[in-house]
Image 1 (cartoon, helix red, strand yellow):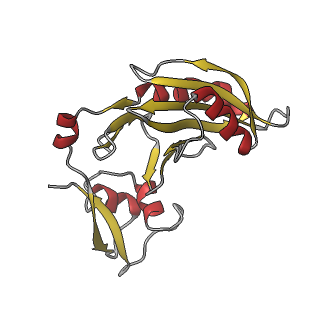
Image 2: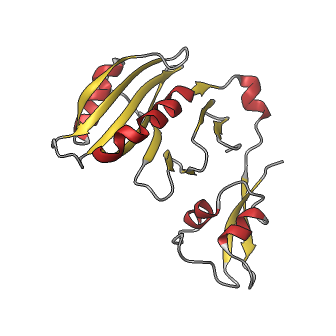
Image 3: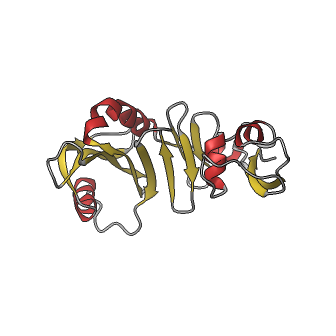
Length: 205
């Protein structure tokens, strides 16, 4: 992460999340969420897609997850081919989850990038989902080469430390305090204890 920008030099893509969102990059997916809200976004690869027809792929995959297509169409994301749709849970209840999901073909690799929340909150956050989706773009070889990846190191907690101070000081303000807690498998409401050896992200060389 560089500010709001998520950059992946190996897979050579970039996208931008809203200010203040927490972001975790795992080996299989990128997960982002709005703190204090049940609003999430996920990015992941489609491994061995059954079809190159993005609309059919989206419909089939989302149906397997219990969602049906409400509306959508073939819409480019920048210069990339994509299908973007709104999907709802099988029930018509107002609290059923709704998702705004894009299936994006980037140089032959298909990515799923989508936002999920409940039906009552969807209209409020749909524009944020669309903005993130439309920010997805490929990175040039030169851009990817210039990226310096963050790295993890261990830090021993001191008596006066809290997640916020550790994130700002030892963590160089690279990731927010809540994300730092999640990175260490600790509840965001639970402070680290003196002597704990925790992971922090620092800038790469």
